[in-house]
Length: 82
Image (cartoon, rainbow, N blue to C red):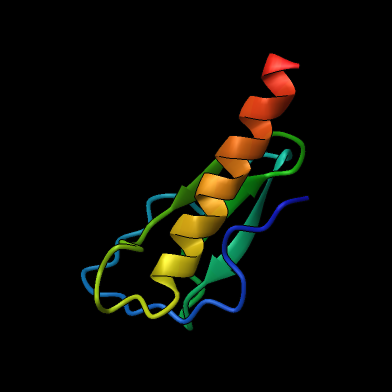
């Protein structure tokens, strides 16, 4: 599995979580201290979801997250065109 979010410290404000659990094929990859879900990832497909702004100055690992995402897109695109 490819990880986009790794050891991520996020700053959250106005955080509202509307779900209590995720689908069986989706795993939670990051939460904040109060257990609100910040990032999810599909177990088999290159599908990700984040409830944060990686481009924000308050996201110290945001640039790494964006680079990882671009790498996933490139790798997936290469597989599809082969």
